[in-house]
Length: 189
Image 1 (cartoon, rainbow, N blue to C red):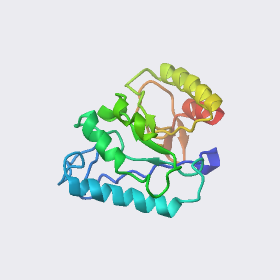
Image 2: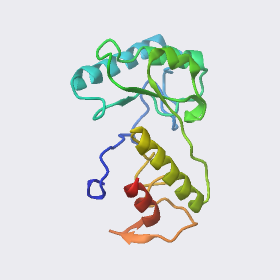
Image 3: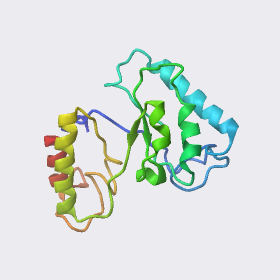
Image 4: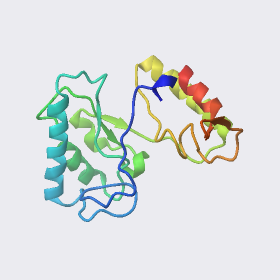
């Protein structure tokens, strides 16, 4: 990844790990629910406070926080309560991102007063040529705005390696299937 010029990595929960209290977009369902359990909400706040203390003094351009990956199964008001519990007491200036509701597809006006960024998703199962054109346009706009960006995954359905798409010609890269056209768009962006 670094050899190709990428400088951001998302650390997902590994699917083979046992469920933890809280929230994960992927099955299995968590034992306790972040949206309704005050104890889990407090634990969520403590986790983000720990990260905020640990990263205090590191500029937001180098470290930002995305609180909950693709929240779903809750309403905006409950989601806003959870977002409000995160990290502001420890590092009020830290850039905090909160994904839109319903897997990042719906905006959450209720969190606007909390002064957090809001991230939305724009992917659907779309033809490859359209994806590349859309990606190029978005990367151009984000660069002009000074925004960062990330892929859901580097390897897998939304990434440049082993995506499983049937509508492109792959190149071999160390035994993996490389979407060279997507990689070139990303590197130019």
